[in-house]
Image (cartoon, rainbow, N blue to C red; front, side, top):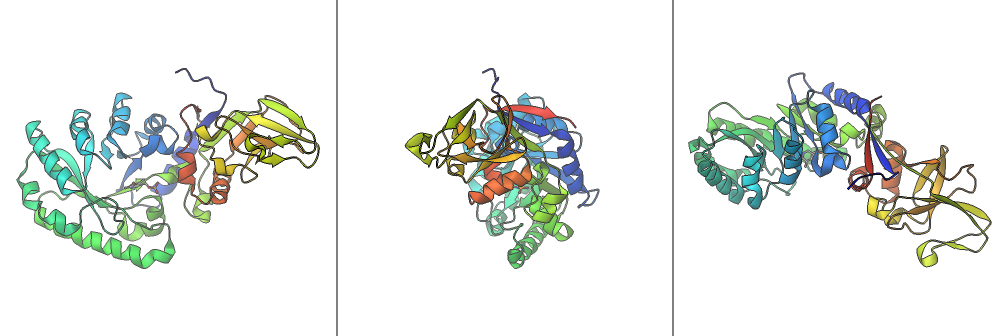
Length: 370
Ligand SMILES: *Cc1c(COP(=O)(O)O)cnc(C)c1O
């Protein structure tokens, strides 16, 4: 489908690269960087991002096989870790040179079988340990039962062993996090000792992990996601980062609304005076959540805040521009910058991750290089 919508998501590659440098400065020069591009690069565009970063990072990660296949089809050659492969997709991973996270016995056994049938030689796999998040991963004692099978297979090579923190951004959970790190250190040491070949890489830290625990837990690689977009999960860190995403649209129509008229579905907004409203071509189908309606969310027009009034429609929102001098066709900043996104996320009781990953694919992606 040809995309000639007027609403667009600007992706600033210069800011992206300067955010990458910011995180590089927090880790040793020798520590590798894996950039996590799941959910089409946090709702932006995984291919644009991968192309922009490919010479500056060592690894990519995606959540699901098809996300990795899309990167391969776009010509991306970096090694790609698939964090959450499914049994039915294991052959696809091999076909597209994607590296599985092996997080459970049934996945390990199936992959070892498949590696043999495909006659693979030292195909890289990544062992995922569950150290407390209780989402994906082996308990170490479960993994232990497979060590001789892992050592015996020439079809695979253990490229890394990794784990994920449950509360890396929450310093009230420091004790829990330190315990997760301690357990990962001792379990991975034991594993490496038992494997007694070339030791696999180790990695544990996401964005807030890099910010809070780089000293003890950066190991050989870190996994950077939301930080690249300028969100540090912490006011100070966020203020040090540059803005990458800007969601823009234009005013489609301006209305004069008499006192006591209503605006939008279910007549949710009632005017208490003569006012002006602007209709904007972006709605809940584009990721502008319905609970940003009725005054909770706002956009910027002529650098002034225009609150969303009434209910968010599927393809449109209406905003109050009574006190803003503006015209049909004028630019509207739906998400002006990261601070705006954080304010909207907070108003909705959620986190920036949820807002940016919801931006629909009918919004045009536009690269900005300066
Ligand atoms: C999403 C994800 C990351 C990146 O997390 P950010 O908080 O966005 O940096 C790292 N590791 C795993 C396993 C993930 O699922």
